[in-house]
Amino acid sequence: MLAQTALLAAAALLPLSFAQISEDFENGWDQSKWSIYAPDCNQGGSVSLDSSTAHSGSNSIKVSGAGGYCGHIFVGTKQVPAGDVYVRAWIKASKALTSSHVTFITMPDSSLGTNKHLRIGGQNSILMYNRETDDATLPDLSPQGVAASTALPTGSFQCFEYHIGSDGTIETWLNGNAISALTVGPGITNPNGQQWVRSSYSPKLTGIYFGWESYGGDTNTFWYDDIVIGSSRVGCSGSQPTTTARTTTTTTARTTTPVTTTRTTTPVTTTRTTTPVTTIRTTTPVTTPSTTTTASSPAQSQWGQCGGVGWTGPTTCVSGTTCQALNPYYSQCL
Image (tube, rainbow, N blue to C red; front, side, top):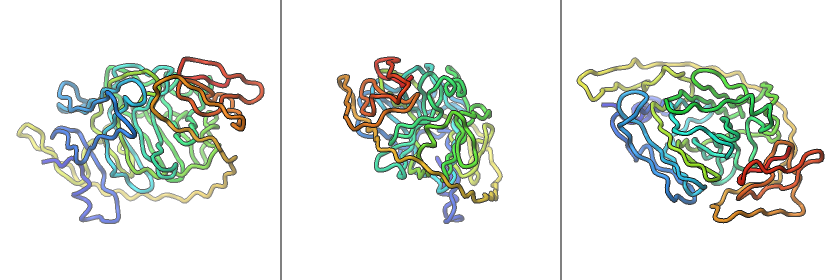
């Protein structure tokens, strides 16, 4: 019988290494290993095991996300490899991403501070990353940056993969195709990643959670299936744990052969000079529109956020740009 993860089986043999986690939910949802995560508050979001739709087999995890920050809900694991982290998940969204800022994968990151997250979601209808402490986005939300990313298709399962390196490397694939706008790191040139690299960043992920979070009124339903977390990329076809046999609900057993992979990484020495950032954004439950401005706040850079419901960062823009409202929840320096 397939364990919900391959981690425990490999731990006794490889105490100093991370065993790949692979979960298809065919044996149900083990909440002791895939726990609910709703930082600060939860008012309306829900997680359930769904047997009506799946990428493979019969089951998937369904996340029904409510509108507003407190409508958020996630499900995931704290079992994260040290160093390079590769994640593959088959994802189905019921609605297209809109202009509002949302998150469907959140990762607590101790390098950013207590209860701060590296987030994957959308804004301006495209896939993007968001760093909670300084609200940096990848790509830049300029017309060029938006055009360089891509939308998340709806109504069917999509293969979404990403790589987070301890040196700050980020790589992203959708259905096996690399998204250049969502790629950054030492030795990588991304003309649409200037906001992201303005600060030195070395991620230290302590969890990976799948779900829904909206910073406006957007609601959505997401399904997650065939999730793999490990220290090397498995691709869209890889789905089985590396150390366990899987038995389906029929009488046919399917066994995979243990795989031993040796990966050599050449150290990269990079000197990066950044300008210290003094603006810290804290996300709090929103009840009424409010805008806070302080005389000492620095001007926001071009394409950066400068206003909206719940926004507490800079509300003035650098010379040559003005703060323009795109919707009640987001204003941008244009």
